[in-house]
Length: 102
Length: 386
Image 1 (tube, rainbow over the protein chains, first blue to last red):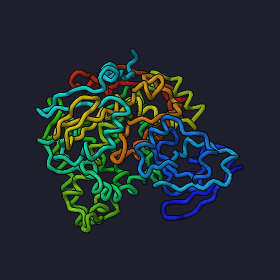
Image 2: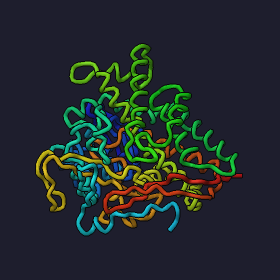
Image 3: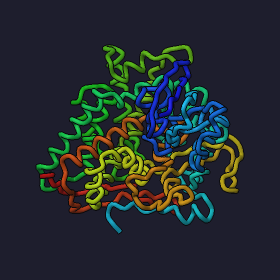
Image 4: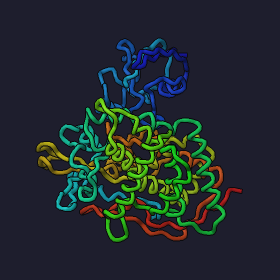
């Protein structure tokens, strides 16, 4: 089980837990504002963009080429950007803090 | 070749040079064909602007038939953002349960009706009414209003004789003027009234700005939705195994919708105007000349999509550009996605199979490219699930 904290643009904090699925699905299930996930998780819309807390970046599987390409032109992209639809929930994410990018 | 197949006419040019050239009313267009380049140019609004003369970024150009600027489509940041922000929440209403229930009721009724017939012309007698009725939900106006729009026929700007018909366009423009005046007199809960009450640049939206937004809403979602719905019917007619798969795995419907939009690319391309001398694939683009972002070509780019010319219903990574890309990506996409999702749900619930009886292809001519975008006519029989 991984406990993940989402912080939205208007500074609302939402803590959610899951042991499977994607981080995007978890966010949508908890109505996290700014995670719209328009395309349902096929890496086409970039509306599930989050910034990962620095100390968790190396605990994540690296972003694939397509995800990196999508992020290249995403609003508010940084070195800590990920598309949460491509982040499969693992134990290693327990305690992770994510700032919603938009 | 199956009737439902949409071949990719851009492959050779995309691989060899990365662009194509189209003549259009003495204002030629360089079509950008590769996925990466299309995204890059779409993102680069400083060099490739949308805020040119109204109608100029559309191909074929509408400069000679329209003075009203379409909003937020023909604006650039930061003004674009200000107007788009006014509309985002309204255009996300298709995610709400009551909206979805009404859409589902509409599409169920449409399918029930065609199931009683031996032969149905899909474009005019199924897709057009479906698109028009669904639009009453997006505008939040009475259902009956759709009958007027259905009577206009399938193309808002095109007629039998001409790809650009000023007289036909005027029917829409005059209608929107009237509806705006009505909303000023009797404000309601509809999109016209909401826009009239909105503010940008520190003042109320002008009538002209409201008109520009409404033209975009009508025109942008008409042929595109009609093509997507018609092409979906043709696809499932020739792929009963896909219909059966969705019946047993309805959880992949969201992915299937994205894949159908990738494959159909209902809008072939959209233009931009260069603000300075630039280059696309080492080809010079002069200041004040036009390029177009070819979504249809980008969606078949083998550098990004495996088996690009196949419909892979549960394609997991699908960064298609069927709804455009970057800040101008389709405002009506939530509505369009909901229409297609609902259509697939109703099809698997009520339809056993579909037989194509006759069809006439709709081929667009863009310079060296002839692209099938869908059908002018598609005659089918829907068979009920027993």
